[in-house]
Length: 254
Image (cartoon, rainbow, N blue to C red):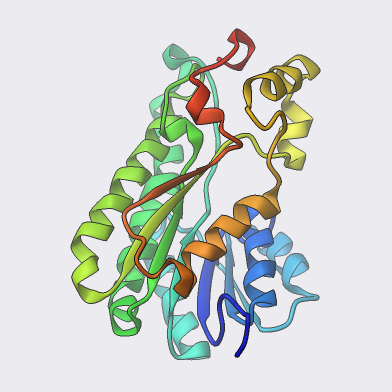
């Protein structure tokens, strides 16, 4: 009997050209799935997918209903079914609450929240047929407030609630919906913008005393899409090294 967690499955991963989305894509492939890689950055998407087998790259702005419908249609035309949807595409725009313009607010909401709603809704009919699953990527910032994250944190909190709505309404069709809320992750972007003081403060505040890796977040995503999570729905997994359990933490992190 195979030890593969996911086999013979078609998975859509948004925001798949880099970071957590790309790490999840590679894990799904290693487990025997085929992956529709979705990203708004076509050049980066083609570069990321060029050396991967069993993938379909689709350029798509997840905040645009017509592009989302086209992406789902392309997925079905190519692979004939959809088993799992990973809503990972997102943007971060941090700043003081009184300097957050409505344009910034809408731009963050459009990708982080509208994108999850649109992709999930467009895939729902097929997910019902397959008794599939949805995994939405939120953030530790959606579980607790901190400064500079008015738009970003609010969008991620809404994603958490949307996940619970999906679980409540789609469960009777056999569709599971869960959420992963990453804590601090050692990405190239984070390392470029985090000062040494912030890095040290995170290490002190996180019980595991380190940042997470993209692959560690991807492992949680792949697990929730697997049959090993067949009775798990409507849940939020904070993949954060224990950071959420310790409160806001040090002033440098606010």
